[in-house]
Length: 379
Image (cartoon, rainbow, N blue to C red; front, top):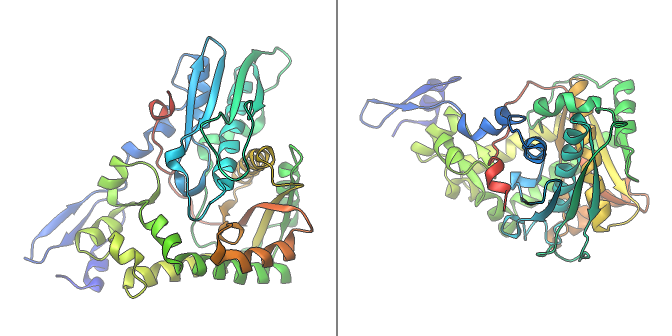
């Protein structure tokens, strides 16, 4: 089998060849295009609700689970549910992060509707809510109402360009004016957004987020939850356009050579695991600015509102040419994370519930995250 060094020499951008053990070459594809087709199909539906939903399904969400189910009713109504098979029971035991992702979905739906001259009457949790777990009851009832007074939201222009940028950020300070604009954009729906530049507090957050990631990947059940959702190589990403995509020629070659597999990614003794830790450490330490979103309480509606605020802030960051990367490990409510959970709330919470923590900065552009497509979300 070729050495890792020789494999890396053969891997470049786009389509590559990897050396085989017999001296031949294996053709390895570029990142999966079918998995990203929904980004191009957005807005290509005639029926109003489907048109709007094709944009909503591009919302950010934890581990890219895309846990959204929609039942269309009549001509102007839909009921929105959580797909209970797509929760994260280990790292998100109370479904808080999943609910935030549902809020982001509803906000993009709202922006898309306004673009067509409609406002949405959203009734959250019409049959009640349970803080401990989501269940079969709907997340929201949504009615589309034609409104000649409604104006398109300028943020809609950035929906197709929005990303969660997980690259190492450049050593460039984010201007104070940009940070202020981001905070103002996130101060909606009763949430409070705060941003800081490269201050002493940011130094503490760099170390805290590094430790939180390390705690997650060294907690066996938490790490296994991520490993089970890894899609390694273009073939897997195409077959399952969700979860944690490890897409592109390097991962395809690594999988074929046995260097990048679910087993190696979850084993702390392997090169693949250690490289993953190293990369996330570099990402954490590269942050030159941070932001967080708080709510007065931890209700389900507050979680939805945090998701709505976050995606608006993410869209504004896109307009400003900035990268946003949610860094939620320290906010997770499982036992092993409790000390870091308390630390981050003591540091930033001020008695409020921190719903989102993210780094902000300048980075190289990234391609869209895979999406399952509209049909997968309709019931």
